[in-house]
Amino acid sequence: MTQSVTTDPIQQAASDWFARLQGDAGLEDWTAFQAWLEADPAHAAAYDEVEALWIELEDLPASELPAPAVSAVTADTVVPFARRSKPPARRWVWTGLATAAAAAAVVVAVLPQLTRPTFTDYATQRGETREVALADGSRLTLGGATTLRVRLSRAQRDVTLVDGEASFDVAHLENRPFVVAVADREVRVLGTEFNILSHDDRLAVTVRRGLVSVSGGSDGAVRLAKGQQLIHVGNATTSLVRTTDPDAAFAWKSGKLVYRETPLTEVVADLNRYVATPIRVDPSAASVKVSGVLLVDKEAAMIRRLELFAPIISQQSGGEIVLKAKATRP
Image (cartoon, rainbow, N blue to C red; front, side, top):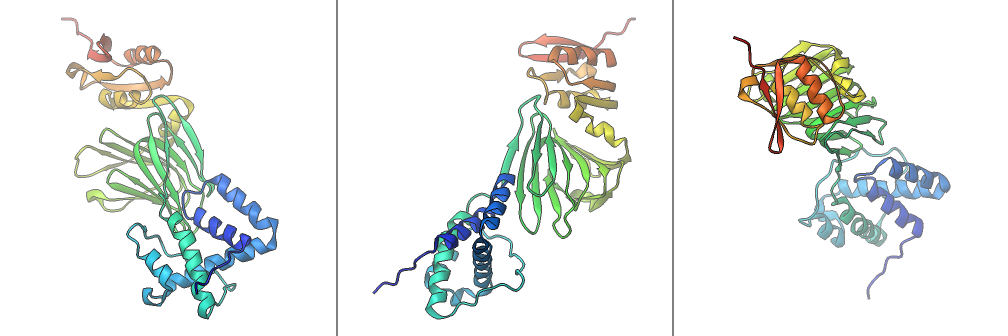
């Protein structure tokens, strides 16, 4: 005789919410979940029971799990996730066959959803900026041609800056650090405001508020305070830490690119994230440095302003713009 397990609709909804919130839940998800909890006291009770049962299963050795649960947990497709802290007080104590049946039902229902990708990807096109409000209260702004990935969990908030530039205004959450993986470095904070540029083997981390720790590479852990900037270029063995005006690093958010004795090659690397036609620096202008404020504008206007700031001329060549040094008079 086969025993069937009847699933209560509220219990099933609680299981669905539990699985959904382990993945890439956004602000809309958390808002809807809060509304569901407040709609009926039975909803909160059912959710607590599902969470408590799952923690019970985490604590049990594999040999003591009911057979259906063991086969689900040991499947090759399951991706491990961080163990959560136990919730206070309200926990069910299940015994006998009821424990095995309910545990198997919850594991089978929840595990397939937990194997889904847990990162949310955000990206911008050339010349585009985008603001992202995270469910934890943090706000991100992506510059042109930028790609990053976000995962929010109960233990830690993870971001991977794949390429481009982004500013971070991080909500302070004790015991829930905010970690940005960028190139071969890791930027770790609890709550602060900072900017990261990672493009063409160039990394710049600038702090406008609070403290951040940058680790990785040969530098070890480097702490940056307000008004400090870490710069790492190419295959250099060490990074440069200097005092800077943090507002200059954030100026791109208001449509301005600020430069002070910046190599033309770095300026062009920035511009190529804002213009449609690729720009290239001719070897004759490789040593040119730029000082000034470029407005993020139409492509032709930005090139004209750059020619005013530096001794260069621009030439259209095929499908690109080439910047060459101005010929000096004999």
